[in-house]
Length: 264
Image (tube, rainbow, N blue to C red; front, side, top):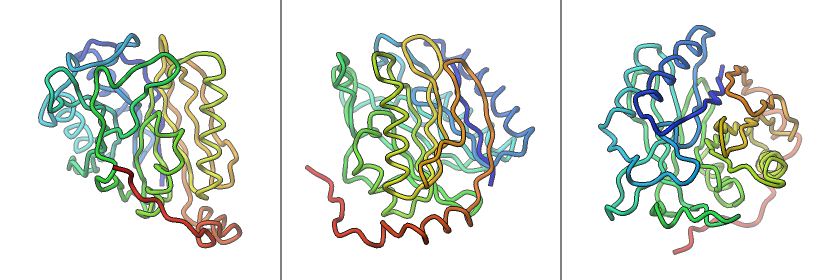
């Protein structure tokens, strides 16, 4: 099956972002992609802190347009957005999955808020429920499990998705720039791939304050695609047989002795 990495630059201008997403869908459909992955906060982003002022409901313009474009082009999609929180002073960092018919498959609400490296997402956002059902999508003979940005630093998030059947770990991100951050991003993506014998599709935002450098990592930990810092699209084919061969040679998932249990 075919996937497209949509490493786009996102602003606080919701309307302009929708125009950019429409162009990406057209380009992805032109090359026959099955699944388009857009970054975290694809609906709107402020590098100084994205909060409730940028939130839209699931029936708002961003998700509605995403569903229409998916149906129009016959392309499934995963994209980050911001939903209203239970507290008006906070929003929810969410990723939605849409199938090629435009159906809303599910929503993942980011569990691990980025309270690190001088950032405090918890001042603007409320976390998702760690016990909520994982978001997984079946596309083209593979199962894609979704987590978000800072979740990449927590191996339990990835393992829980694999337990739910994920062959590919999809990580939309707006990975903050800074010393060693690009190295951490690459290292962690490779680690999650190796320990789960899973493909990792880590899609970052381009632009000010973020790292870009989207990655496609194979289940053996080899980096197949690595983008730079600028906006760029890249398409690749994923082979279920190749994934199965790696898991047969390295049966670490079958050999493990522990399970992941959500913490209250």
